[in-house]
Structure formats: C-alpha cells, structure tokens
Length: 306
Image (cartoon, helix red, strand yellow):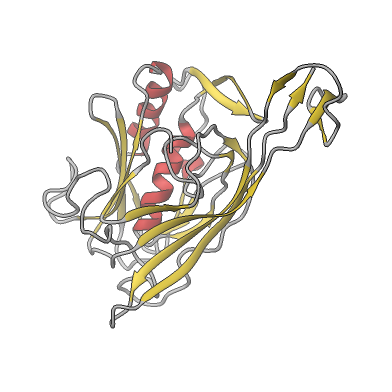
C-alpha cells in the first residue's frame, strides 16, 4: 500500500487482499451498528478494543506503559489510532491541527452521543481553516478545510477500538492513503457526520494531537477501564475493473459504458473495491470470534477518451 497505514494503540489493522494507491472523497453508506446494545457497566457485549496479535503496535510502539502525552493520571487509553501527515502540505496539516485542538478534551458521558460536526462546528475561513486539496466527484481540486476527513477517520478508528457504538459513519468514494480501506469516515457539515454513543458506565474523553513535528495525527479515547483485545481486519472481497468511457455527457462527466471510439485515452481509470471490515476477538478458550463491522463499496474511476 502506498504510504504508511494508520497505527493503532492496543490493536491491529490487517489488510487482506490487494495493496493499492489511493485517493479520497465522499460516498454515503450505512454501517452495521457497533457495538451491539448492552446493559449495565463493563465492556460492551461481544466486543471491545485490544492489541495487535503479537502484542506490538504496527508502527513499533508498545501498547502498554506510559501511553501518549497528556493522559490523565487515573485514566487509561481505551483505543488509539495514529495516521501519517504529509508535512509539505502545510495548509492541510494546519487544518488537521486546528480540528485536533478543537476536539481535544471533549467529554462524552455514559449513554451520551458524540457528533463530529456538532463538536467541530462549521469549517469556515473565519474559523481559521485554509484552502487545501479535496476530492470532489473523484477529482482533486482546491477546497476549504481539506484534511478534516483525516481527523474524522482517525477518530472513527479510536472509537471502534474503544468499544463505542457507531451511529453514523460514511466511507469515501475512493480509498484514502492514510488508512486501510473500510476504516475511513468522511464528513461534510450539514450532511455527512460521524456519530457514536458511549455505551460504558463511565465518561470518556476524546484526545487529539498532531505529533512528530507535524508528521502524524494521533487520536485516542481515555476512560476508566481497558477494553478487551480486538483486531480490525480489512478484507477486499471484490475488485471492480474500470469501465471504458467516451466523450463527456451533458454534465461534463464521462458517459459510463460508452466506447473508446477513436481519440486519445487521457485517463486509464482505476479499479473499484468492495471491502468488509471485521472485528476479531478471542474467546475464553482461545477460539477466534469474528463480527462484521461494515461493508463498503469504493466506486471505480471511469476511463476517459478524447
């Protein structure tokens, strides 16, 4: 996979199937509620968070010990995800850092709901956001507050690993370079949100920081208890080849299925992917327990001829 995948604290990300180069944007889809309903305190029934099978973080960091900077003395890290940033993309990194500062310290009480859009607010120039590259209809173009979806995606993983109940999450239309397929979460103020509920009997705190001299984004959730070990598995179950396309239609987009009659192929297209994400835990007898978290479809990019 091009670029470094996200790193998870006390858990693993496993990608089964093809490694591909990625680009980003929004495609709306629902996910299986995560985790299932539970009653009383303690870990949510049937799932929780954990560590890579070897006991080591994929990025080489230990999963236990002091933890990230800023962890309160009485709190534990329930789940943590680290994704890479491109330092040369200063405006994008600045947007990520601004969003992280706003989210850092958000407290979600037992049974309460967290909304990414409600906590972050509108992404405007007045709020301090800068223009950066975004993907719209499969095309990269300038847009305000580019990079925000990396923050929501990194938080989504931390929430999964902390055993939060996912209420709303939407994948991008194309895979992203900073996380395995199926583990991203796009947002758009007023339409697409990331929402989850705290099913634990104690409050949790969202923490977010840009670390490593601006090279990484770390998001983690603190609480009073450590969940069980879990491993997130990203599985590509179908590869959809790009379809040929001819001249653009009245919308300006290529016409799907039109023959590449004459002319020059200016874009070869890109494959689409159907992906399932599983949460794997170990039972009392060591047996593997698997639960489906989500199933997403990343649309193929059509070939273009002129």
